[in-house]
Each structure stands twice: as C-alpha cells, then as structure tokens.
Amino acid sequence: MSRIGPRMAEGYIYLTISNQGASAARDVAISFHPPLPDYQKTDDGQDGVVAPVLRRRYAEPVTIIGIGESLNNLYWYQRGASNEPAEPVPAKFSVGVKYQDDRGRSYEDSFPLDVATIAHETQSFPGGQEWSKITARATNAIPWELWNR
Image 1 (cartoon, one colour):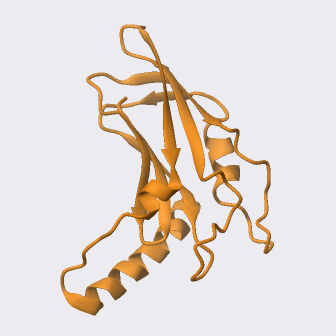
Image 2 (tube, rainbow, N blue to C red):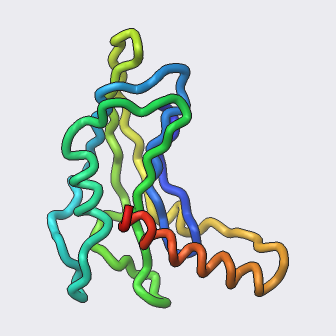
C-alpha cells in the first residue's frame, strides 16, 4: 500500500486508497484524524454522500485490497459556483492505515492531506470548449454513478 490521497476532477476531490505494493494488503483498517463529522443530511437537506459513506465503508477493516486495486470515494465537492464545500468535512486531515501483507507482517502509516493543496491543481483541456463541456458532463455524472452502485 503506497498511494493514499486525493485526486481532483473539476470541483470534486476524491479520496483514493490504492495498493501499489507487491502483495495483497489484508485486514486494512482506515481511520480519519480528526474523526469524520457525524451527519446524515447536508445543510440544504440533501443526503450526505461524503462522511456518511466513508464512515460506513471503513467502519470495519477491509478484508483485502489486491495488488493494483483502488478504493475511491468522493471527499469534497463545491456547492454551485462558490468555493465552499457542500458537506462539512475537514479540509485538513490525516488518513491512518494499518494492514498486514501476505506474510502476516504488520504495517502502519498516516498520511496528512490538505484540500487546498489539491484544489489549486490546474488542468489543460485540448480541443477547446467542446472538450471541456464533455468533461464537465462526465464529471458531474461521477458522484451519481458512485452513489448508485
């Protein structure tokens, strides 16, 4: 396990936990510091799709994450044109990881993350405006597809 962190797609930031090691990661315990806030609905009454989903997914250790396998979850998204997050999750946090390899050796690490660092990422879209419209439509569909799986 060597890749943990956010990745950005136009206003959305995803938490990716990926096993880039040489063996499967077993009994993978994920923790968040500070702990994720406890809410089910956003301030505007929508179902929460960040902390509630992350708490459910990582409530128990993940049995196994295979070599090259990634676990992706929406972590941050903006409300409309503002830079404000749509859900009350911490902008600065650490993800703790504990797991065992195929030989039973235990590993533990913590990864400090800051939304501001990834939010200032710039991107180039070859092909002009039409490409950016296609990308925007695809990006807007991602949370819906993740939620409906």
